Structures are given as structure tokens and as C-alpha cells.
Length: 168
Image (cartoon, rainbow, N blue to C red; front, side, top):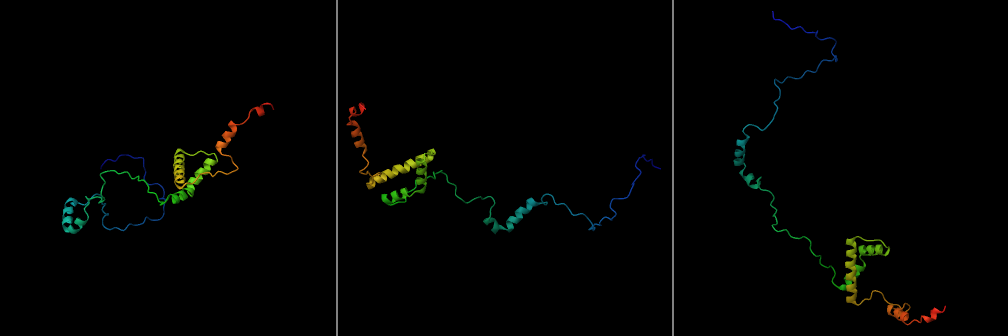
């Protein structure tokens, strides 16, 4: 008789946890195969597929990428916008009705500061406004008869008699 190694384990003690029997799996004879990797001979079957589908190969070649032409010279995309106005009067009217310019001018009147870009844009538009007014012969501020002109004020200052105010 063969010798047996002594063990302290007695065997199964107690009752199994579930009293229900285990579900029985249907036996199909063998386990399904696991599919890993490519099938054998895939290198050689590609050549056969090419010969069979010669018409499709001409239409779709995987080596060819986009058909979009590539520009060889990089061009600047910034173009000077063409003026939309036909006459100086129309351009002047458009400048005076410009909402963004009016909003920025209102900010300036309120004493708020503008960014450098905004200030440069306002200066450019105001210079163009002055040029258009000169072309059309329009004066910016019409003088009224009640308000003396700048020259009149200086003349009165130069001709004033200061001795009259000295004694008082």
C-alpha cells in the first residue's frame, strides 16, 4: 500500500450555503474557440482579393490621401476692405450713424478711458470725418452771434484798461 501524508483536514464540515441545485449547463460537446489575432494566411489572401476587385481598387486606393491642392506660397489673407460708399455725402452719413463710434464717443464724453485699439480706431474715424466735412464744405461748429469768437476775446483782453481795476 502507498504511503499517505498525514493531514489535519478532516473533509467537508457543515452544509453547503445554497440548498438549491446548481444550474446545469447544456453540453455542446466542446468549448467555443477564442478568436485572437488574424486568421492564418491573411498575407496571401490580400493579393487574391486585389485581383478579384480590380474595378474597386481603381476607385479607392488607400495610399492616396486628400485631393485638395496644397498652396506652395503662403499668402496674406488680410485684404484692405473696399469702401462701400459711392459719394462723400453717403460716407459721412454712415460715419455719423455708426453705432459703435457713437458708443465710444459717449464713453469719452463721460470721462471713461478707452483701450489703445479703440482709441486708435476712434481717431481714425474722426480724422476721416474731418476730411469728409472739409470736402463737402461743412463746418463742425456753427458760430452764433451771441458767443464771441476766440479772436474777439483775445482782442478785448489785450485792449483792457487794467488801471480801472487797480484802485478798487
